[in-house]
Length: 292
Image (cartoon, rainbow, N blue to C red; front, side):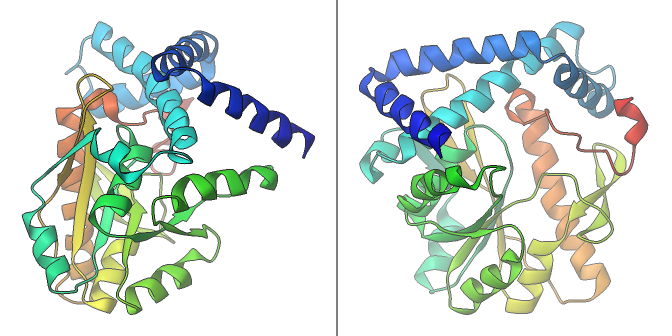
């Protein structure tokens, strides 16, 4: 509890600084983290080598590796700022692209299963989606110290987002859809035979979470990918993918709908490789040896 109170004091002092100074400080911290995180750097390198083989030069891979830390720290800063900023602040930072299908679904009072990834400024993307497009319910993972959980909850619920802790969250998410509320799922983390199905991801058989497809089939709800990109870490574009309709709840339909999500995700990553969170062991279930 003492640590959390000290953190709140630090948070208060940081928010007194002009935004450009806050951003500069966090970018400096990201550079330091990159310099000392030897084991995590090896994970990033292993992922890039596995996904892109020799399609990227060594200098390109090093640039992506460095940006992973920058992007992570900017997401932390965004979380802090989301506790205080407003819908108009978000609107000044983002532009929505290809939202026509989403607008049409919402006009018909349809709920939507939005799927996204730890890609770009995902904290800004989630807040902007829920605040400016439609309120969403989502899932979060508790901190190792539960004292910090209210901080994260406040940052996200400030923008009309409902949250359920990861353990047992499926019931909460299903209830939200049943009540006509849209949901947001992050679908890019490592999966297994219990939570996913085998898909083709970067040319390799990879387990991918099938929750979105299962929920889409059960509640007859379309799935829409939503990804946020930037060229300058200042102005952001939020792009909606074409809706995916799950034909039925049979095994093939679930696999097809999940593969379509994976195809969208891979295409977005290939177009903007430095924006994805390469720091996690995405293929630890299927190809554990690449991390040795």
